[in-house]
Length: 225
Ligand SMILES: [Zn+2]
Image 1: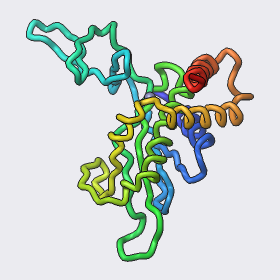
Image 2: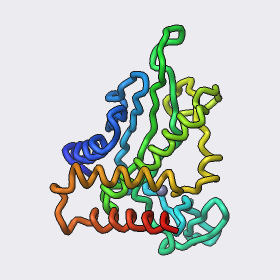
Image 3: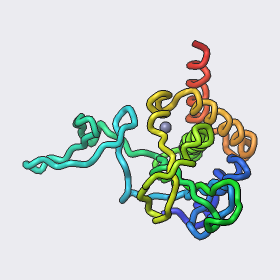
């Protein structure tokens, strides 16, 4: 288990590289319920809640056959052995939800948003993982404003039990793909900000440099063709 100091170090990293209106918190009670604030709950996970994915990042569910053989299966029905799946280092959990920060009837522009990022920091490079997940959040937020979908009322069950307006991102994701151009731009912006803010503090042999530079280079190459 991570200490509170270590958790705070992770939160601070995310908070410093994200826009001013983003509020990264470790506890629900630290959320800021003001218009246009995006609260990001950073939920630090342990081995018990590990989530496994296949080579393409699809979630794989643990299964057991009648003979007691344990295996994993993704939603397409593909079957994998334990050695063929890997635990996710991080993920954006659920949808981004928006709600009015003040009781209805008051004149108030802008909504307060919230989303959860789950992180398994002991599994690998948490900094690179966090940048990656925050880039997904940036795309969700960008799409929310672009499509104005969040204005539409939708029935949506959520763990916070609030009457929320939800953003349906599925269509955009299908069109653009999981790591399309908007994601790549967001990743580059966040990664460069992380290097500017923390580059001097991160040791030269830290795995961060390998993972983040690799991912940056991959996206730059893709953009050229
Ligand atoms: Zn991703």
